Image (cartoon, rainbow, N blue to C red):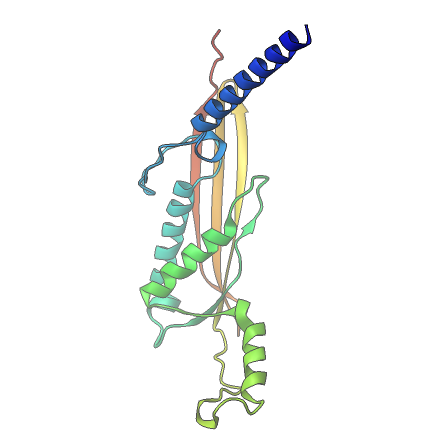
Amino acid sequence: MYADNLLKFRLSSSVFIVLGVALSGCSTGPKGFAHGQYDDPTRVELLDDKFNESDMQQMADTVIRAMVACQYVANAAKPPVVIVERVSNRTEEHIDTVSMTDKIRTALIKSGKVRFVNKEERGTLNDEYDYNASGNVSGPTAKKRGGQIGADYILSGNIATNIQQVGDDKFIYYKLTVNLTNTETSTIDCTEDRELRKKYKKQSIGL
């Protein structure tokens, strides 16, 4: 009797081990995804009702063109110096506003129409000035305080949304507003907004 029970236990264990190996082999990627391939980031595909990279691209492109075309930038004797503030998210949805801010700043720098002060690295710059003044750096190459360029403008913005649901239809409205504020006069010399409206149909659950 003991031998029969032991044999059954070993057979059952073997079956579970084989099944475990087979199932683990079917899931080769994160959360079971496999056979990945590159996709076109410019292709518009609404997979769900969340803010996506296509929305970000469309909004950023509109704002960038408007900032470059603004008379205070386009007609400036030399490229204005700008400090960029992170786009504020006024929606209830998680939106990567850091990426949106970086996208706008990168495109504006590449346009050659504006220059940006790297506000995020001010602490690192102060540390570097201290190190340069410590005597460890060759005199002709040592960098001193007092040479930084003051910003002419502050680039800031916010994104807001409004959601309406009527029957089986869901409407999502996004609005991105960006301002260029003069640091000397505090006036908003350039401004632009971009609106997006998307419609979704509620799917019926089949049996």
